[in-house]
Amino acid sequence: MKVNKRNLISTGLVAASIGAVIYIAFSNRELENAWEALGSLNPLWLLGAFGCWFAYMFFDAFSAWIYLRREGFRISIGRTINATLIGFYYSNITPSSAGGQPMQINSLRKAGIPVGYGTMAVTIRLLCGQFAVSAISLIFWIANREFVQQQLGDALWLARIGWAANFMLVPLGLMAVHQRNLIQRFAHWLIRLGAKIRLVKNPEATMAVTTDVLDTYHTALLTLTRNPGRMLLQVLCSFLSFGGLFSTVFFVYHAFGFSGTPWYQLMTISSLLYVTASFTPLPGASGAQEGGFLLYFQGIIPGDRIGLALLVWRFFTYYLFLIVGVFTVVLDRYLIARDEKRKSKALNDKA
Image (cartoon, rainbow, N blue to C red; front, side, top):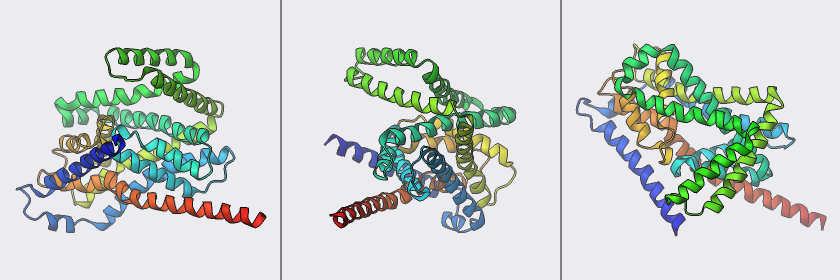
């Protein structure tokens, strides 16, 4: 019952988010004909936005595929992409993206990858991704600091908090290799503190889960640090993946025929929006992404079109994952059923 309620709440939040964006896009009194504006979008630039979506997804999957292949598992890139899309789908429909990694690991397990290796593949991607996000946003921020100050103004503190929260996971992840016991003691202290103020209901179970997670992080990072070439390849995949995500707004901007803001400034604001909204505990960071877009891109995108730009941008960075994810879940079930039939047939032939 609790799971059903959570699913219902998550579905309601996603639907409310989509409804709010559609309302914002089509209720602007300054825009005479929203449908005509959408129909005038340049299809080549929209194709570029789709390419950004594909790059974000593909290099995420490619990093996991490379890791698993190097560990000796004969898994196809197509099956890895399938598992990655399932992870994206459940990340976007569960609060704090809590369901994405477990479902991706489960999909890999059904494809023949042991849970431990699937967990490490996902964990390595997470840590390298956090490093890439922190590095990309910081580099663009420093290189365009005057523009950021002018564009964000009083909202700059939001970006600072968001960046610090994202970057904090990088040194904590590195400490999990060299200071494993210290990190565990600190985590257990936080859990006990949470139990005292009634934020943690079952501290013993939470400590056990935390210990298992830290063991996985420790093993995964230790494997990478012993092979710098593999680590650099994982980081490169993360840079290419998030580079695609942050570039989406550039193609949406030009699809509307806008001009005046160079690509590097668009990517700067896009990356800062991501770090600002990524820790919102709602499915797909709903609310924070939409509100942040309207706030961060005001003045860059004309006021009469910013709602429509938000709708198109959100389609390529969020809604498309929901649409593709539904078909991917169905495909995953088909592949599992097919593999089970093949195994059953092989056993019958041997008998």
